[in-house]
Image (cartoon, rainbow over all chains, first blue to last red; front, side, top):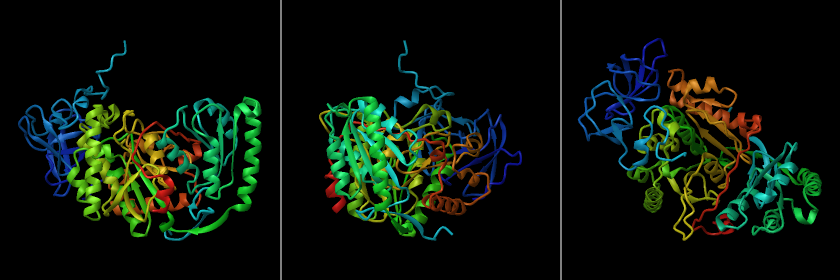
Length: 116
Length: 401
C-alpha cells in the first residue's frame, strides 16, 4: 500500500479489502476523497464535512448492518448510511459498550454524569 | 548499527539494567512529601510510593518488583511510622537481591526536616555503595524487555502508531528480545483474533480465560476503555479501538499471559493481564489511567516502555524510560518537545512499515545506550499504584519459574 504525499488531494485509508469504511488522513469539507488500501486507489465523494481520523462510508448500508474496519465488525449501523457519509456515534453503535454510544458526537464528552 | 551491543549495569542478582537509579519509596501518602523532598535535586533518584495506609498483597508485590527492577541499583524506603506497609520488609527484599538499601520512619527521625536530612544522608551513602558495587556489562537485544502501552488514541493510532510498534516488536523478538503488551480491556471484541496468536493450545486456553475475565469485568463495572478524546479523534466503538490497540502486538506468537509484577519467564511476546481477579473487595476500574498500565509493564522487568499516543499525552514514567510514539504527524509537530518518534511518516508516504519499525529499533538502541527520551529530559516521572487483587504466585516464586 502506497499513500502519496499530501499534495492537496484529500486522502483516506481502507485497511482491509472487506472494510466498508475508510479513515480520513485529511480534513474534508465535502467532495472528492481518494481511498488508498489493499486495492487500487479509488475516488469517492464525501457528502459532508469529515474530520481527520474519522471514518467515511465506502458503501451504502441499511440500518443494523455490520460496520467493518480492519476486516472485523467494529460496530452496527443504527440508521441507513449513504456512500460518502460520515460514520460515527450518530449512525454506528458498539456491540458491547452501551455508555460510549451516548457520548457527545463532536467532543466525545460523557453526558451522563451530573455536575450539579 | 542497532545490532551493536551496548554497556549496561549488572545487578548482583544477575539482572541487567540500562539506567543506574536509586529509588526512594514511601509506604503511605503521609510520607510522600518527605520522600519527594529527599529526592529533590538528586538526578539519579526516582521517587515512587503507595498512597494507602492499609496494605494489600497486590500493591506490595508491585513495590517489591519495582525496587528490584533491573534499572534500579539501590533503594531507600521511607515510612511515616503508623501504616500497615512495612518499609523495613521492602528494604530486606532489596537487600536479599544484593542491592544496597536503607529505610527509616519519619516519626523516629524527628519529623519533616530531620527526616529529609536523614534521607539525604542515606542517599549519599547508598550512592557510594552503588558506585563501588555496580559492574558495567555488555548488553544486547536478548537482555532487553520492552513494554508497549497506548493512550490518548485517535484514528491514526491503529493505522500507524501501533502497527509500527508491532513491527518493532517483531524485529526485537527475532533478535532474541522480550516484548510485553497489555490493555486486554482494549481487546474487547477480539476473542478469536487473540486466540489465533497463541504459541500453543495451552496458551490459547490462557488467552481465552484472560479475555473472558476482561469482558465480564468491563460488563460488571459498566465501563469500557473508550475515552471522550478517543471519540473526538474519530474512534467510534471499543471494538474499533481494540483492533487498533492490538496492532501493537505485532505478528509473532504469544508465549503466555503474565500477571502484574511477574517477571518475563523467557524471551518472546507476552500479554500482561492487569484485570483484577474475583475478590470480595471489588477494587473498581481495571486500568483507571495510562500511568497505572505503564507501571504494570515496568513491574514485569521492562527496561523501556513505548507509549503510543495519537492525540498527544505528556506523561513520562519513573524507573524505565518512556519513549513517546505518535502516528499523527500533526501531533508530532504540535507537541514536538514531548514526542520521541513520528510513526505518521508511514501515513504521509515517507516511510514503509518496515522502515519505520527499523527506525524505532534504532531509537530504542540509542535509549538503551543512555540517550534520554523526551519525558526523561523534561523530568516527567508520573506513577500510580492502586489497591487491587490478582491470584498470583509470590514474586519470589515467579523469579524462580
